[in-house]
Image (cartoon, rainbow, N blue to C red; front, side, top):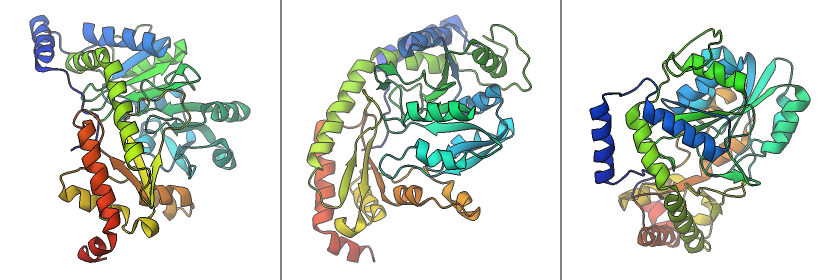
Length: 373
């Protein structure tokens, strides 16, 4: 059983959509399906502008350039490598900040001590179908007169106080990677209510679909293909069922792992509606009896794909070399366990996975000895 959502339309729907693309012979360059997807996203997310691009890394890079970021930008150390690397194209520099040990997100209290001269923005992440304290971060950004925007890769179809994630900060980037609930197999959308900012994003993205011409210092090929748009639109049609399935599996995990010593179930925080696309736990090795990595090996032997940080927090090594202490990021990287949920998991699969986790905990001493601990 594999990690990730991996939602894909039925073969009949897929074949019909792609025969239509081949008959039209319009494969990219802001085609009719890409335009349809953008319009549908803008309506669903209640934003003025939804601009689809090749992938989330390109989306973040285009965003930093369009925002005109210079100098240092606060980035959570517990984030993906591409989040920080996206700043390089605009000549900005990531300044790493620790995250909350409770939620894994930035908080205003953790960010404010880093807001020295030369900081032009905050790039916050919204993880696992949850969100950071967006209102608190916005108040902080406003007080210091700096830009706030979000890497909301995991947060499509989530809401904060009834408002869809996608409309917060100056802009937000949402991923359509296969791991996400709305999959285009790969892709992303940049969302904003700022007309001038949207014009800059479109002019940087490509000369197709750029709308109003504005001067930009750089351009990049960030166009979404018609194939990607077709798959995203079909998964969009299925979205209510996908969220319901995730919620059902998420609740089953929570119930069946509730009494496992040394295992803490991490529920989505900061949102009033979640997509429930990730199952996240933390392993306390002292009480569970095995380290997180040992448990991953046990599950792998049963053909269950579990993972640790999956690249989250890789920047902590760079930060450590700079003498920056990141105790909460380090704790998350050592304890986080992600379990399968999505198209390849059914209720019976959750029962099997939970039973294997409980078995590993009950027999932890023998397993640890076998693994050479």
